[in-house]
Length: 217
Image (cartoon, rainbow, N blue to C red):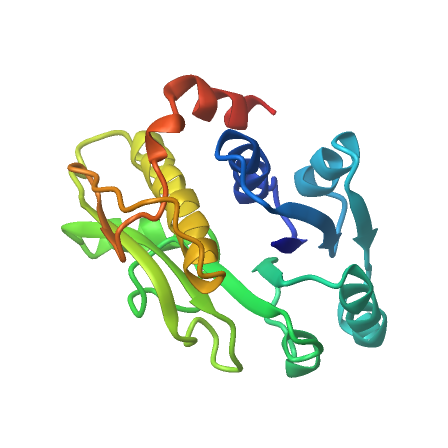
């Protein structure tokens, strides 16, 4: 699996994938990171020997971005970027374009980052989760690949809930990659989280020290 990230933020999902590839001995690699700004994703990529490209301003450089994506020859392009992508970008090659969303779509579609969690709290949602889906012209409207859900107690600290959702979302994303790449390392059940489809890998390898490393890197 050749994975390319389009990124704007700190790169939490990318860092997770980079570490998970090693933990699970996956036949996969992050081939590069394309960003619309200098950010944590770019810094981490540079520090770990990945190729990076930054395009600022983003809107005026679509042709260059398309050429850059093609040059990486990716199998999967992850659109964790704070931009609505024009069709020229997400249809520029044979790669699968996928996105990760911190809600149970279609709930709170079109919202970036953990704003979804704030909206869920305002609505007093009793179940929260994460969704990985294909990218289409309809924002957050592509076919769902993988989801996970948990009950929530809003009396808990928001940061704790957010960290839980981040971890779940990362695992949903990795599950989606294995699903669309038709890879299966086994079928695993998790008593605390409802993953659908069930996980195709053993998430027991993601220990507390693993998540601490992700947070600190």
